[in-house]
Length: 521
Image: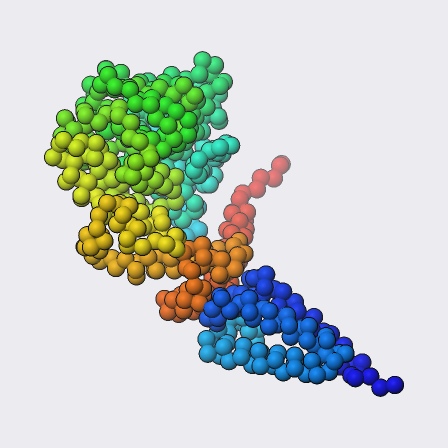
């Protein structure tokens, strides 16, 4: 008895149907290895469900064709047209990154970071920095917790710690002082903390827990130009600038405290300001003040020379120990910027810090001046910093798909025309700037080896609604598709890791060979 198709043909049809069905399932569930190719080729995202359904119908049609040949022939013809269209689309888009042959050969990049490795492995900066503070303090601070040279100890952030206080990553040039009191004997902790704060931040008296073994303090202190940033988490209860210390002419600073968690109180000039998370307050080191922290300290402190604020003594006196509500627009924008700076300063280069120092000081000036509606300094400083605040807002919201000129103008209480005029002064064309920021963010994300999300998901994360438009814009900006960039950057990462491993092994071998041996007589 003859069958409609032979055994071999039946096996081929079943395998083809299974393969096409799996491809359809992967597309409908948006697996990265399928949808990334579609994005590279510029296939609109709205087509994807229809293409997946067409594949699924084709697979079912092939199986039905085993019993009804006419259906199988129709399904095969449809699939041929489908895949012919796919080939044409790939050729038109020049998206060959996923084609296995000819395989791309990664370029030779070995040894490229050898000089960088040497620069971050040298320990010369550590003795210099430790030498700047007393011996009692050297045990609790070090410039970089990742540079183990036999001195100091690494800081380990405890549960609930906000921000990375472990120092800058390798290759960065900033040198923060990292504090961890837990490494000291209990009897030495209070004096060591006091000495470090006096030498690096400001001279104050600190009241700790009665039991020396219960004293805790972790943090990081960094100088960013004229701006000193001190991020502290401690169970100290009271910090006091006494009248004697306040009369010291060498400490003319204004402090801005940003509450991270918990609650605290600032007392100065007979006023009291109770701070909750997100709130800010300023106080003047030329006058006595007290910081009350019943449940411990968790703040970022920003120290600014009084002269840099360009504000009159009357203006400064009027705003000390006044709560700046973190929910209000200006305080919210300034607080967000300053918190990001405090928590990421260890990752910035000196040049990057230089670019951020003046805008940060300008924000602090505006924050202070905004409280002085009856003084002439207020309007001048708020207007002067409006452009910085708008750019910071744009950076913070660049991932939002509905970001628009109207929305930005509304948030800053200006007209759209005035917004465009302000940005034009800095050479910023809003639409182009936002698009480039989003593309740069996508480019960085796609280069991360541990990120397994689809290209479409990354594009959506950074505000691109149309994946096809994103693919075209990415290729126009960087000369390759998102998928090609992801493949190339990750291959380069593997090459650099290999080169580093070889260099490290060679260095280890050299040190081993140079180590003198002593034979017993």
